[in-house]
Image 1 (spheres, helix red, strand yellow):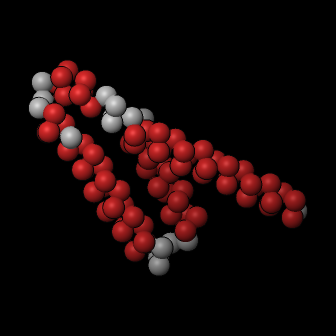
Image 2 (image 1 turned 90 degrees about the vertical axis):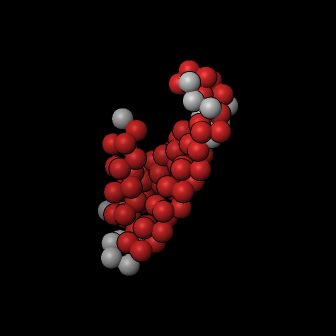
Image 3 (image 1 turned 135 degrees about the horizontal axis):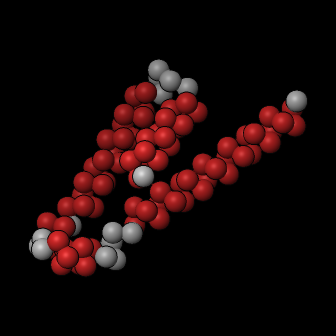
Length: 91
């Protein structure tokens, strides 16, 4: 039974590792294409640049909320809720 628990923990670790890498890749994608995004949406570049500001602000707010919720929820459950939220928003 101990071997199965270790396997489950390792699988969870690799899944979260890949999700973290994927989230990092997704968050950096607007950078190189920001000028194209602004051109195709007929929005000035400085207005389109607010994408990065709101993304960073959202990340900071999410971290603060997660920090407050760790007193109420187990960190693993909180992480699974966050992953589900990311998956539902990105799809």
